[in-house]
Amino acid sequence: MTDTADKIRVIGCGMIAREIMGVREQLSLETIDLKCLPAMWHHHPERIAPGVERAILEARSEGFQHIFVAYADCGTGGQLDKVCEKHGVERIAGPHCFSFYFGNEAFAAEDDAFLTTFFMTDFLARHFETFLVKPLGLDRHPQLREMYFGSYTRLLYLAQTDDAKLNANAQRAADFLGLAYERHATGYGDLETAMNHAAQQAASRKSTLPASR
Image 1: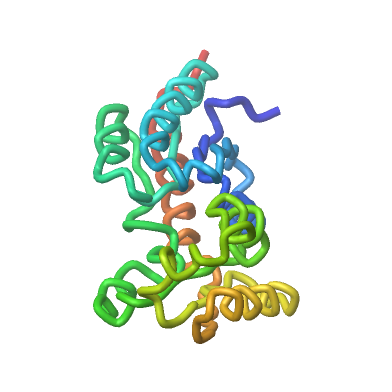
Image 2: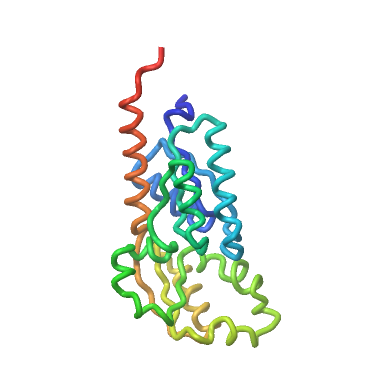
């Protein structure tokens, strides 16, 4: 059995857990060991950096030498970067998952074009009611739609998969919010590249370590 010293602990947001496992399977990254943190922390970004730090310390205590953080900044205002720097680990580049799914360089190039865009991913299409509608109270207070979404003009579904049910869910979400609907197939975007790079780096570092006696 491969022990923790041979694996890479990926500390990931629950919103992208399915996608991380999809990349793991697609690229046959058998050394990836996933630890998910609550998706709902995106409603409380102040919890992300300290939560990731606890997860890093836990991984170290379990014997993991290779750790990768599968979070973008995600509203932490640079606090997550401070945690990563403190513990000598890397995270996926980008301000949020919409950017790294789209491709960070391409997303940055669009810039102002996204100012009135509300983004949706496979996760949000799958959990729109439980993750957004109910926590924001839109089911109980429809007037809040204008308060939260009045500055948006379109919903852009960044699709990781080609799933007819999720496509329909995203369209219904746009209708519910009163936004124009667009879909852009992204696949896993920069998440795939970053995880593959992290796995390769871990393998490279392992190969330079002296053999255990």
